[in-house]
Length: 135
Image 1 (cartoon, helix red, strand yellow):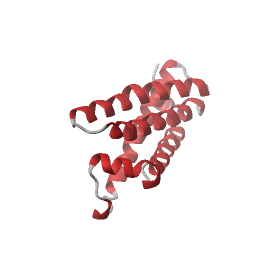
Image 2 (cartoon, rainbow, N blue to C red):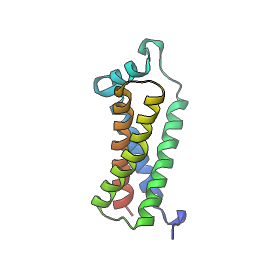
Image 3 (tube, rainbow, N blue to C red):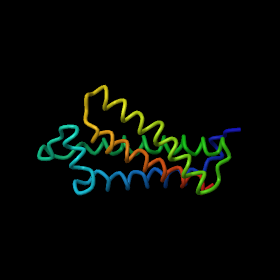
């Protein structure tokens, strides 16, 4: 039976922080940031975004980590391999596929699918492993 009280909340927090940190590196100009800015039409000379955008992002990652921990608990996942598969499946099926759908409807380039979907898959794998192994 799923129980929110049985989740390892420290693992969920660390998973969200890990995703946040990897995404911060991912969106740096020398990694995927320039590609992303071009795909969405962001002009870097127009200044920095509001700090609140990062608060909202962390909350979203925390919610994703909570959901992954609940799924891991529900399916009895407990090994590195289980977490890897959980992260890959949810990352590709939920985040990657949604990035593809959004880019298609918004008439955006494949670069946007690669940048946003790619970090979604990577982030889910990281979180899936953390919340699965650290029980």
